[in-house]
Amino acid sequence: MKTRRNFIKLTALGSVAVLTSSCSTSEKELEEKTNASKKVVKPIVISTWNHGIAANEVSWKLLSKGGSSLDAVEAGVRVTESDPNNSSVGIGGLPDRDGFVTLDACIMNHENECGAVAFLQDIENPISVARKVMEDTQHVMLVGEGAKQFALEKGFKETNLLTEKSKKAWEKWKEHSNYQPTINSENHDTIGLLALDENGNLSGACTTSGMAYKLHGRVGDSPIIGAGLFVDNEVGAACATGMGEAVIRIAGSAIVVELMRNGMSPYEACKEAVNRVVKKHKDLTGLQVGFIALNNYGEHGGYSVYSGFNYAIHTKTQKEMIDTKFNRK
Ligand code: ASP
Image (cartoon, rainbow, N blue to C red; front, side):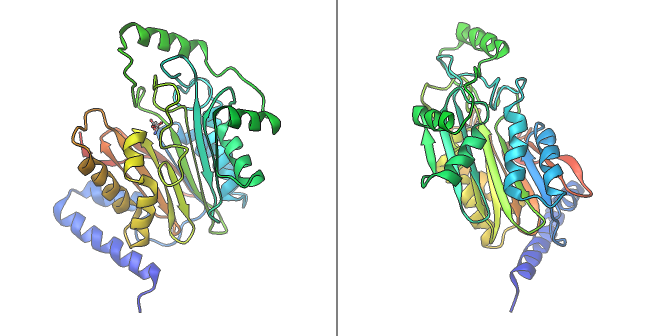
């Protein structure tokens, strides 16, 4: 009988054969870079966009000393949340159309425990509030005023998240906006970060200020377990970035994990999920979605609707950005 490991190996090798017969050598290079069909690589951390490099660095410090993937994913994305120059996550995030910065985040560990906050205002590190929801309550998600009240009770400080830079950008947007929200405004959005620790445990975190200039009250995929993030230690983990509504419609990250459970490599699973997004939407104008995934062998991959998406990887021997393949230019 085939072991699961062998099955994955065979599937991955099968896909190499298909890819090499129809595609360029760069597909082969991608297989190399993404550890497809090799031995278990751990610890490992991957995360979305260029801001993932700095986040991974902090995660890696913990992982390389035998730290847990849960601590690593939280610590990693906190870096991005606390960077005032990042206009899509945490402090400095672009506001909604009425000028309020509202944050969404979720976290999930290897035991399927999870926590989330949505439409949270005035708190710099929503991911840590999400972790408190997971660890200190019986609930999975708190939103809005209730989430803020909970955060303050837990000792989080009230902070003005609207920086001068973001305020100016919002005021400029208002001049010609027609109140249309924008996605991928700076080509680096939500941070989704996935880690596999030395003990073979997977965790993930996802945090964002969401779509810039959205309707007040809008919540995207990022804090929704199964959409913006999903972890199943028996299989792997996945997270999403881009147009949250499109990700929710296909239960994006949960689908990626299920596809991996059925034998697909992380790359193939992300590609199939993107294909579903493409298939389910008649108008793809401006509809960018990207997925990244990591399985419990340390194999990873990503795919996006449009070109321009990338993710950062950090292991003992590899530290680089990987440009994902895409459905269209
Ligand atoms: N997925 C986020 C949202 O829809 C935004 C993004 O990743 O750009 O809120």
